[in-house]
Length: 536
Image 1 (tube, helix red, strand yellow):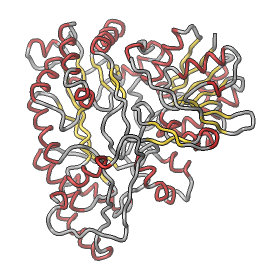
Image 2 (cartoon, helix red, strand yellow; image 1 turned 120 degrees about the vertical axis):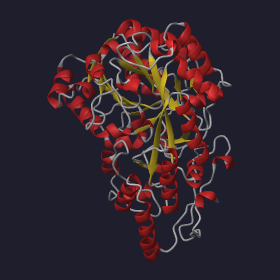
Image 3 (cartoon, one colour; image 1 turned 180 degrees about the horizontal axis):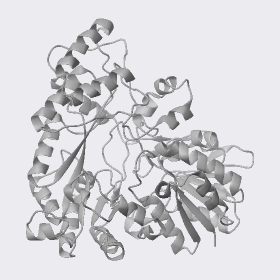
Image 4 (tube, rainbow, N blue to C red; image 1 turned 30 degrees about the vertical axis):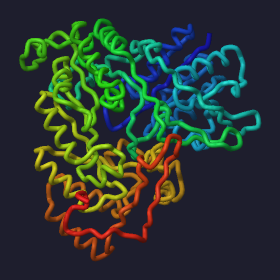
């Protein structure tokens, strides 16, 4: 049996470790079930620095060192790979996750220490790799869904791996292999009263994928959107509008939560799904009702919801509260009421903007009116809506900025927008790649190292504003200073004339299998009058 060391990289160094890595915990469980010897070094939880990492790498004769994550962890992943190859040279270094799936050939070039990369979903691919290693078989060409270096040093991409269709075949995550006491200490989230008073929160994935085509969203190869181009050594990856949406059964989800409650005393579950409501729509509006009905009948309904009293951590001693993700067009009052009764405390809405033009160009499938309505309905149901917004879209202009501020006033909310960030794997990364790299003197790695969680500005993809302007405009939005926004608009127009508004090719014009495409005529400006362009 193989000796496997899983390494969870540091994520968001400026923040406390709050989320047990769900995918890594699943792979640890799968490897345990297969009889392999598994250890986990959770660098994100322990935050002990390089010396502790070195000790972990030298603590045994590892056959495999496995690491993965999203692109924002690139810097830590790279350093971990370097130490791994230096201190555990006998181990096969396997990398997976979004950071390599989105740009596999580029990552293999930037991180020569990686022996094999898993592209897309790893639940079948990773065990197959381990079996090859355990049997001393290094013929990687037999394995689908990977990228590797052959004996000549060339990077080879093997044919894609099919996604598993029955998610219920997956084991429960091996949460016990992670330092839960550290994560318990950071259970509290300022999203709702129930989340804030949580003492033992765990996160789960009830589904994989999303039917929306949001152009800012990066892809992980788990939605049926991953495709391969033809070329030497297996070509390269690209992402399409194809979708293969999958979800666990209500029985699996509720049994998993009951397991988390009985084994770990969990009092809150956060669903990490891209969008629970799109899954519900795909299930013909049955899935969430099945989950909530079973949640209640199996005794997971919190005390406060069962008795119809306000939540208080001293009296709400039974059941499990939960929160998840939603979409403005896919909620109904009766569904929200059922979610509330089961223990739903918060729903996160990616509103992104309150400009109809921007929402249309995003591929968001909603409107400013629907965004506002969803917030009102969610509040009326007793659930806390968590509104997210961004600024700095390609077609951002003063009209869209003012539209959002006016909407905040109507709804009585305060937001600090994120910055639109073109993460690798997103449509906007490929659309604006030249512009992105130009901001980093052509250095892709410099861009990857600069990426964060969109709370600070990195590469700008706005056709009309630079980084300094976006920073200033965001602050004026937060201050509700429409007067100065309009004053700066006059200054901007005196310098630049009319804005550039990209002409996007919309999803309705694209068929199955079509790749991302975009065209704009930067010399052709659209005349903006005094009325909001969002109304046009």
